[in-house]
Length: 234
Ligand code: ARG
Ligand code: ZN
Ligand code: CA
Image (cartoon, rainbow, N blue to C red; front, top):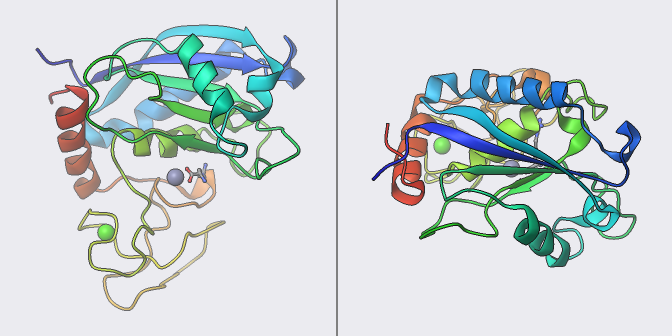
């Protein structure tokens, strides 16, 4: 029994207070974020539908539900909030505002597909709330942080994975790249041979406005990872 390639998305807004400055994201930004996901994944055959939104006021989780100070808080947060099976994308928006650790520049992080049997508590994506479309995290304010993190969740590596090695990101049509690209550089070419760096790819580190594509090879990898690990057929 397989799920369809329509991914149910459970959106968990974790905030420090009920105000916008406390990370309380308006529903309009969540809807805009789902629209960005659907536009960006259109070429891959995957689509996303908002299954539910919930709001939790917890300033501890809001500040450091992440890797910058160990996994204590994210484990508790996900255990309390996660919904659905291995085919469901759980998204947590938080502030990453803790002053200790290396939270300050963090936009998000994700779990990769793996051999989950049923509802995997740890599985999902945690992103900075201000990275949603219309947020305040410019130049990362067009919703591409979730596009990128969901890319990991569907089984993709960074385009600069493995640097200039031949295996790289395990996708053959993304040219090798020695290091992440930032901003939106022109004609960047960090490995000899294979073509210019794929700086417009969603799995690089460029500005949101610079990111425009998944390749056909990435779409193929997504399909195989999603059917193997998340019970999804296309
Ligand atoms: N640095 C993060 C990661 O490695 C996210 C990068 C998102 N980039 C963006 N333009 N929004 O997963
Ligand atoms: Zn990444
Ligand atoms: Ca590649």
